[in-house]
Amino acid sequence: MTEVTLKELTGQKCKACSADAPRVTDGELASLMLTLPEWDLDKQSGISQLTRSYEFRNFKLAWAFSNKVAELAEEEGHHPAILLEWGKVKVSWWTHAIGGLHKNDFICAAKTDALIKS
Image 1 (cartoon, rainbow, N blue to C red):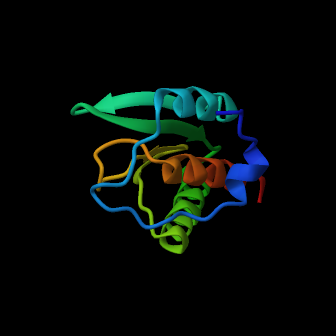
Image 2 (image 1 turned 90 degrees about the vertical axis):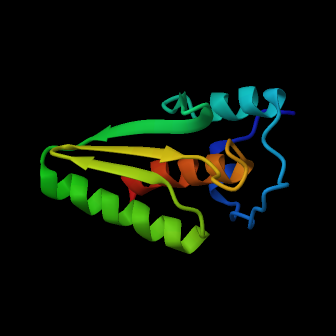
Image 3 (image 1 turned 135 degrees about the vertical axis):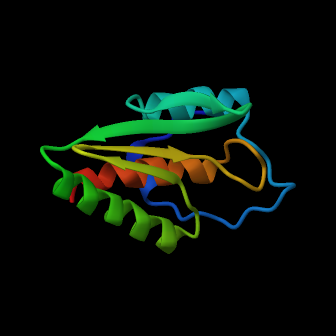
């Protein structure tokens, strides 16, 4: 797979997933992670997830960002884990239906980054 650009990811829409949807391949994963260098690949209970923490000057700004992420999730029909703390928001994307990573997770991670600039 050729490297995907951030603009290409943010221009895409999530597709509904079922339990038989394909996970990203190792090649796709490597390419997509290059596109999102500030995101980490974590495993929680054996499930791969994309995770990133964002820092803010105070709770109110972190809260506002959390709300933007929640609105994005509703628009895309794809929902992350969002941990809101004073001055910090941690977002984790993965596809529950397949217990791992799908291209939707990378699309939403790119769109989450774009919220910082909006």
